[in-house]
Image (cartoon, rainbow, N blue to C red):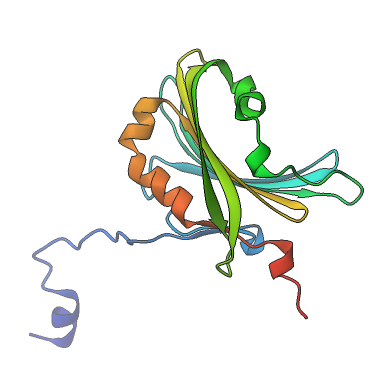
Length: 192
């Protein structure tokens, strides 16, 4: 058997499809990173950055098309501009008010104290909520899981949104999204 035959095989068996166990998505020069993004070809992703009145937002989105509603995974940083009010403490979030526009009715809100990791491993205090109810548009069952953390002038948000059935079918991807999303706060980019 020649060297190339030993290296590449004799061609009898088809090569295995390359399936990495971990895929990292680094967005906005590394400011937003998710270390375990969904791997299926059916997922679509987008990066979006925009300025609003008093803030800049950078958002990484993974969307799984589905009917009646897609499953969306988001990781966002809001940076508040100088002269504007700093983000509220996540512990004081009125989840029904903040996310109510997405629902026609909210039947359940479960809130837990947690943390959000930065790229350097800092644990920032955070709050996470799961809301269930009827979506406003489209009018179908809707579940939103959202984590909020604040550090100085930045607010970090990790979110999943879709039907309860999509949450059940893709629980592993959602849990990986939440457990591996990290941010690089401005304070970690400053050198002494």
